[in-house]
Image 1 (cartoon, rainbow, N blue to C red):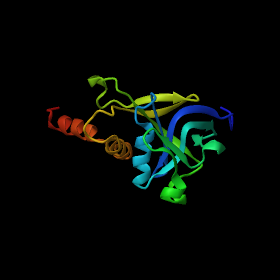
Image 2 (image 1 turned 90 degrees about the horizontal axis):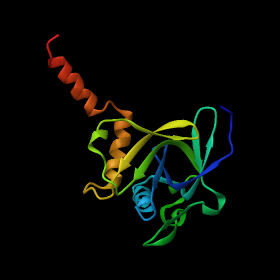
Image 3 (image 1 turned 120 degrees about the vertical axis):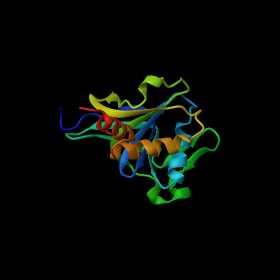
Image 4 (image 1 turned 30 degrees about the vertical axis):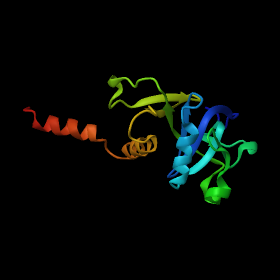
Amino acid sequence: MSAHSEPQPRHGVMVCIHGQGVLITGEAAIGKSSLALALIADGHQLVADDVIEVSDSEDSLFGHCPNMLKGLLHTRELGTIDIEKLFGVSAWVESAPLQCVVELSNAPIPADIEGQQLTTTIMQRSLPLLKLSPNNPASVMTRLLTWLKMQQHDSAGLKLKRRQQAQMPS
């Protein structure tokens, strides 16, 4: 793999949550920008809205904001929002390491993916993927932040399996 590659444009919204770049994807009007706005209001940072330039370095992918879109977020209800003006200079960053992808979809989430680690590929790199339905009664933001915490810690599913195995006779 080369040390640096030409940036590839991706459609979606990218935010930085505790130093982790999260690319939010999905069809038009699914709620990508609304999720990003909720995260920004919660203290996280916008990287880019609509077009994210993804580049590859030796050790990771990075998402960058095109110059024309810096610090701007567009929602259908509110129009174009100047994030720095409304939330402060620290509410957006020009780039961040791309760590995972969240796909918003109205399609039913298959029951058989429960507990599975889904992945997607960007620029020949595998990234964790979370599929979320905006129609769930728990907020999309809450489910995303919980999933990110689960990625950092031993998941409850693994703990349950260990407990079950400990109870079984040898």
